[in-house]
Length: 228
Image (tube, rainbow, N blue to C red):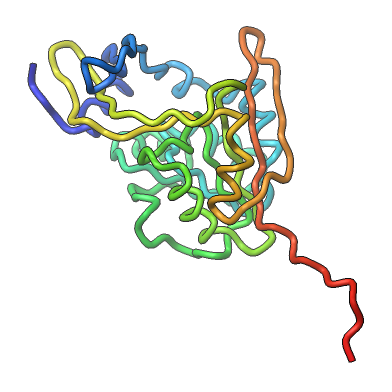
């Protein structure tokens, strides 16, 4: 097998090459999973729109992929910036009319501290394999009363982190860290990142349930005693 960059194999997948996600360690026990590129390339569907209903104001879509969520937000009249580390994702998002840039969320971004919403759709709370660190980072992006909209796995998952690879034919990517966060773990995770769960939502998407949380900064404590 030839080992290539994640971006190169992800770009191939976006352009139609069948690609799977595999555990990097032989002992992981993870069966290969098909990368759901078709879901990302199509227009936003019912459950996507339900997630977008939770976004308010100017929004930054982190890990935008080919831009379906950002495009649907823009169609609703939102000012939206989409970012992704993969150049092909950014190109495809721009083809949809999205304002998009190739960028790592952990690097300096425009308008830090002034975004109304950060969107982490399609499991992107798993970026980097350390969800608490990612949530602390995106907390820096939103205004004090802003929100973080997070897609989650269902109950019983907790937080599962692993090394993974992409595989397309005989080529594999270099290992990358990824996490899956279940709805049962989001309250403690948010607290560890200095946030709190404002609301939880579940949408029946014909074949499955889609869980989403809205996170925000904790409300300031109000004292009850009088001062002299």
